[in-house]
Length: 385
Length: 233
Ligand SMILES: Nc1ncnc2c1ncn2[C@@H]1O[C@H](COP(=O)(O)OP(=O)(O)O)[C@@H](O)[C@H]1O
Ligand SMILES: [Mg+2]
Image 1 (spheres, each protein chain N blue to C red):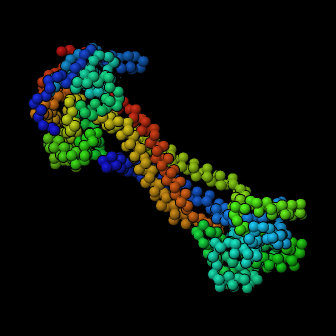
Image 2: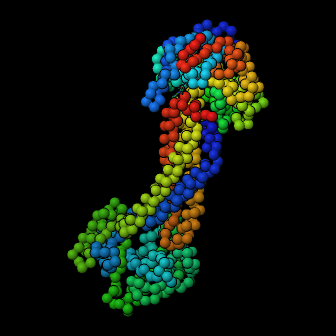
Image 3: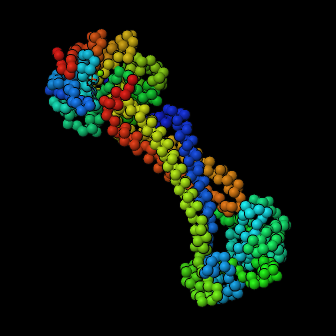
């Protein structure tokens, strides 16, 4: 109690200095939290992947399509529960910066395979009935104000021409981590149109999503699928949905690494600031530390005072930083719209923030505590007056 | 606890034999104390006098166990303190030495009450007992009505009285005071000296006081003179 009181009063001795240090910590911890959340957002797809879903794509490249008739062959393989397909559409809504993912899917199997996309049965029925219908995620709907019945025009890139879709269903995510920034429509509609405009590109899909009945057999089934099409004109590469997503993210890994580095640089800078504050503090109190030593207090007590004060300041700054991370992340996530499908501060991020604060608080106190422990009493006492 | 102890064992509180101390300054060894020998009886009140730089503070610091001699013998409170290591010496100081400094050396963020309580943290005494003792000590130095004041809210003389209460709170064997009135006006200085005389007189406290003020030294029973590191009487 006594010690705690002494630590807190010491911390508040130079109110302005402490306030500025706390503000610095707040900003650093907040920035760190936001940057970590950006990194997390990058991995959303990989983190929400289901273990029983495999993705089969062309062995050549992700942009090379596969013949749709592979579906039946894959479905016939032992251990495969169902097979859906998806084509990356890459249409532009008004301007290229309005990015959101669009897929042409075979709706029944695909949507059954993704139970985390929750759709009202009435809306699902409306979607199934409308050839030009689209199912869109809640976040996408909110970002652009799309409502049921709205016509969404998309300018094709991979599939040339102007396309129009009608919003028939809006899906909600089963968890806050579910990606609700996507736009799905009927593969049949895509295929019919392509058949008239570019017949050689008809009857093709981008990837197959394969659901297996036994997760432990995923690797074996992947190998069987790929063996099936070996030496054919379109060889395949099958991997788990998670591996597929990570492979996708790998393309932008340099950015993620840069963000990670920056987030730790921020912490390092505040550590330097904090260490300076504590060093100044300890220097000013040399005479007090010498007095305490004369009275019989050991290095442990002095260390306790200095570490305690450093940790108290670090904790105050980081607690405020963590508290602010949530509203700021929400605002930032809303601003970024569908660019980051999920922008949620994770529990791990909060733990990391506090861990950083702990490291900063301890590291900043090491040198001043050592100095205090080593100060010679007679010399320290001379620092008075 | 702080009561009169008339039957104190009559051993010398301080035994000093052939004590020497030198400092290294710019590669040169400067002798500060040379072959000092004398005793201080328990219950005595000794003034160390001498011109500035004669080694008074150095001698006092050695006796108080906050500095180390180069050679000689030094027994305080019946302990050969030259044999103690840092931790042992700190422990010994906490039990045997009460410090009174020229500039009071109070913790500015603690109230008078908390400052006086500070040394008791090392005794393991429960908080309530500590409080009681502190109140008695502050009463003895006449500051019962200033217990919750911070040092910055007290005059120099009052601060020194808080420091004296802090020095006696653990009932130490010796009190050491380095120019305790050096920073005070005449009237406050007289108050402090009267208080110290009372502690010696009524409580039997052994006091060793460094001063260059003859008026202050008059309060002591014995006066020792230092001249360039040598005891001259
Ligand atoms: N830490 C030190 N380093 C070097 N010289 C010192 C140190 N402490 C004291 N001295 C020297 O020792 C001599 C005696 O000092 P001190 O005991 O403080 O004298 P007094 O208290 O009698 O004025 C002085 O010449 C002083 O400069
Ligand atoms: Mg001196």
